[in-house]
Length: 342
Image 1 (cartoon, one colour):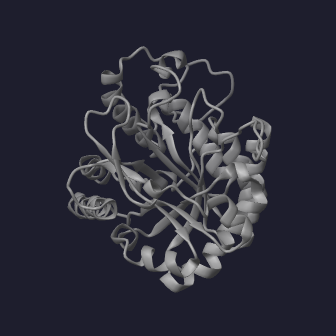
Image 2 (cartoon, rainbow, N blue to C red):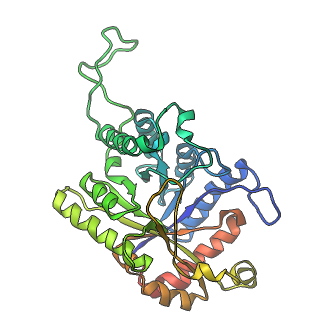
Image 3 (cartoon, rainbow, N blue to C red):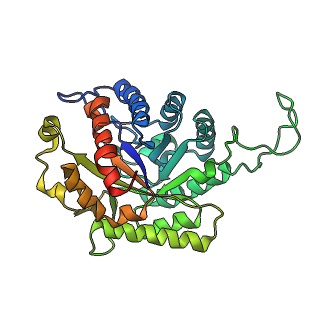
């Protein structure tokens, strides 16, 4: 059994063929998609966060709105770029969102990928270089985790506006259990081990650092195994979760064939390249496209999927809610059972 979720980048594009033309379309359809996905048995609705882009960039209002309209589906991020975040404000927002959603928040955090503007975090008040921000990102994440533990640390004002009990104060609202539902987005084995050491669940995307000459899914599986071993050594008092993301496009209708039946050959294979500011090469996983029985055979050989308890499916959100529910329902009904996911 595996949890199955979707990952949306929340694009909006004003061109022919896009059903998501504006920011309003993107956010409101994101809510509608989560509502409909819950009805067909999807376990998680996850959203990528980007800044200075025609994509979802402010996750907490969105997650709260989804939580208010659903009752079971996990609601998460994959991931929030900590280069832009104030840990204290984020802890307030995350705590409140988790309360509104009744404990269904699953927050993926990390360094993030290259953004649309140079050193965009500087516009958010953080004047650091790209090199400096690497360590600061981890420091902010650890500070955020500590705040979620609910420790009281702030000295009271001796003349407060409102009466309160004696003693130090903490960030409010505090949501018990949220600390155990924070995920680190790891791109390498080293960062996966770091996440385990600090008690975060593991998110691994459709790309990882190119660390060996093995296929993408094997390198990713090795990353997950290293994470699990490091977790055991750390001796945390709860069981971790591991998540991988895949591009899966079943083709069962004429519309599917018209949209995705002529995938570029390069998308059928792993690709190696470089991301901006990254000195080491990165390997990108292939797209799984075709008839459901073909996809089942290919996914059954994926070692990283075998290691993970959760699989996120990237979706073409600009095609709208109806099409993406069709895509997800095909996976739930025609692919997941044959793989033993459901």
